[in-house]
Length: 137
Image (cartoon, rainbow, N blue to C red; front, side, top):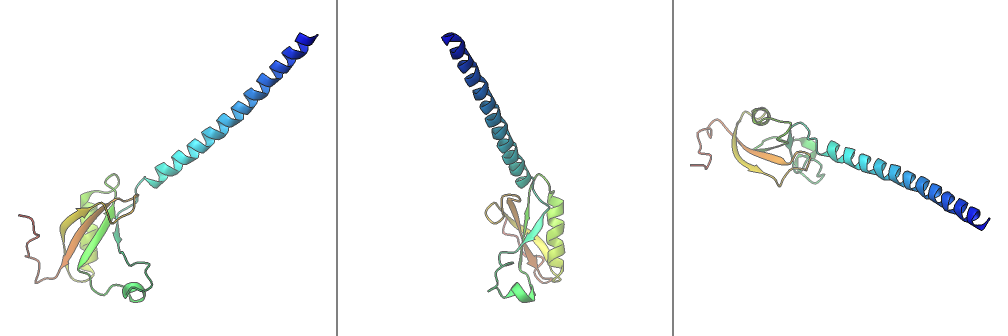
């Protein structure tokens, strides 16, 4: 009789532990999948865009009035989702708003957020500055 009770207790403990283990496994898997999905969505990369450091700075001169003249354009992009031609076209379009032409001069990984980690920096040159050397020989 004692062994039957003991056996039932062991079997019950095993079943309960198994169920708790299954719930723990399901919850862990759900947390893992949710984390993985958010990481993949965050690193998917967005379309290229013109980055302005003072875009949301209320103390900036350009916050209320907008940009009236531009000497430099920073285009943030991801190499996985944007080609160099698209980046150059975006820079040309932005400089053209001020009757200037875009000239590439630097690439950086320090200005843009992780979703679009590459920054292509262009100088906006006026018509009298278009033949200026880019600094590369």
